[in-house]
Image (cartoon, rainbow, N blue to C red; front, side):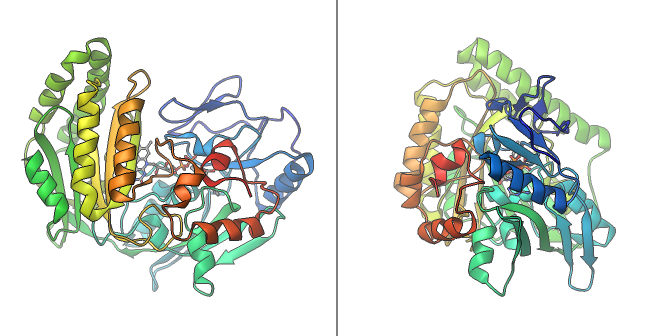
Length: 453
Ligand SMILES: Cc1cc2nc3c(=O)[nH]c(=O)nc-3n(C[C@H](O)[C@H](O)[C@H](O)COP(=O)(O)OP(=O)(O)OC[C@H]3O[C@@H](n4cnc5c(N)ncnc54)[C@H](O)[C@@H]3O)c2cc1C
């Protein structure tokens, strides 16, 4: 596949990104757009190798794009944008070891379906599964639970195609290389193959409840012994929506499909979209809107398969902030986030998700080396400006909790400051220099947050 100026393979319309008729790519929250010089979708590894060689020869930097579900510009590719949509196969499922090997462009949804067919499951996951495995790993995508690993820790082996077209295998024979590759922002090479450690399929008993802010801070400081917990703070109001989940052998006991559709599609997505429209026009209504939203959430207990418990379709366009902070600082960081939004009078009526996670070994995982509280916030996009409040919250997370931003969400930190937050930063940078000496996999976003090679 020749990489010529202006050449365009027709890109897939992913659930997250959109591509307009003139080839402009826009990410999920509609905040970042770019018209790449070249757009390519190699059919196989041989073509990918040729794409890299031709890009290197013409001095064009390469960015692989997944589903475009990152909120920030980490996937923005001004020069050569590579889609792995044809490298999206399940290569092998080993039921005895519960391991699945897939190509880098496959979506989490397709991996989940393959696991399901073999009675297997992800050990843990986040709120959606539209992401590609390459994209989810590159930004450190995680779920919630003090013992629930992020995707990075579910990886037992990966293969990266490097700038020179060679393929390097990263596995337990070189744990340092594997921990470098698990989370890399696409800056080392192309993730072409991943082997994940799955687990036997399981069900969860999920309980939804409403607690006060003070109760929520206490729960964050000393989380209960449950497998998973999520807390949704709403600016301006005292009610916090809480869900917990634990493994169970009980049979499925879920609401009707109509009830679920009404909850997920009408209440959450259309409801939040309408709340954004009203809050934009009449900023003073945000507290009342949040109160109405919280009133619509009823305490409930359900039993369902793990994926139906974790996945909550969220297609309303929004922007998101999320920092992993030291667990002890979690409650104060959430307090500061809420006051930053409220003191600014920002018209925010959107649940702000707070989660917990165990320490991760990947050198650039935001939860690297420590149990973490994930301090999150969101707002309908575009059109509601919360940047100043989020700047303040970011400062509090960094100063009080050594906060590290989710690599795929809003933040304004740059390499010089990020370096001080990651103990293995220099090791990552040194190995990056060896694997990609010419900086083929750089981009404006990568230059800003990781620095050049
Ligand atoms: C509605 C919504 C819900 C979300 N929920 C969660 C959640 O619960 N938990 C969480 O942690 N995050 C969550 N996210 C964030 C999301 O998981 C990450 O931003 C993820 O990176 C998106 O995957 P993607 O395939 O869209 O990758 P993209 O956004 O397209 O790309 C992300 C990065 O991965 C790189 N990349 C992609 N594929 C490859 C590859 N094959 N090789 C090398 N580099 C590659 C890109 O260059 C880029 O740097 C959510 C996002 C949205 C929009």
